[in-house]
Length: 261
Image (tube, rainbow, N blue to C red; front, side, top):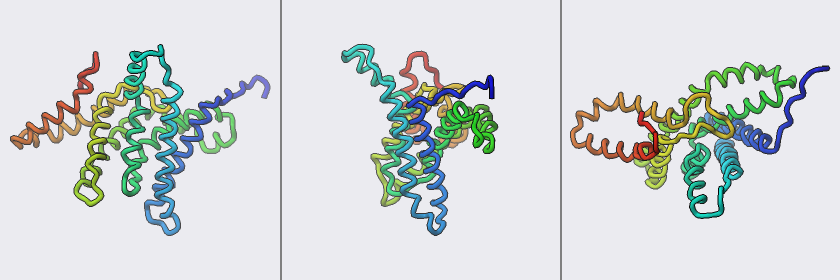
């Protein structure tokens, strides 16, 4: 129609993220469906699980790659770049993916935070580049986009909750033949990094409120409020818990200007 503004052209990076997030979401859905043991679909669970992890991992690695720029070609600049990149959501989620890629069997719930973040990125790209199309209107994606924007804070809180809850899966796994102490230690360090994370961007989406560390600290605060009175009555155990807590929160305290929750 005359006077109608043409949609913005999708650049290469946006196309890459759109394809990878589509793959992550679709594979996660296939994995969840297959996990119900439906005849003929169960066999897709494992390959879909790997495909979802790989899609998200490639997207995070791609962003880290193109955003890695040295200010100068010297050791100080390289150290600064490494410190910056290893404190990002992208790097953290690569560690998350690595921890569960090594799992002896697929754990479909692992995919929830990745698929949720991928969904936010996907609907943002779709809204920007496909709002003029028939399928966008037919699927009522405008309403979905508005709901995603309004609910981003709750979505990020859900991601943090799921990530922390997965620690219990690894704890229980320690009492089975499939136990991996190395994976448990790696995941404990991952959660420690998330607790202090001040990055407010995932894929290419900027949070509407606070950063990843805020949501993790909020959930740990709820755990502390519930478990604190019990731990206080356990005598020597309290000393061990306090020591673990000091180690766990040290990363946040070491950041200039950071405040503990």
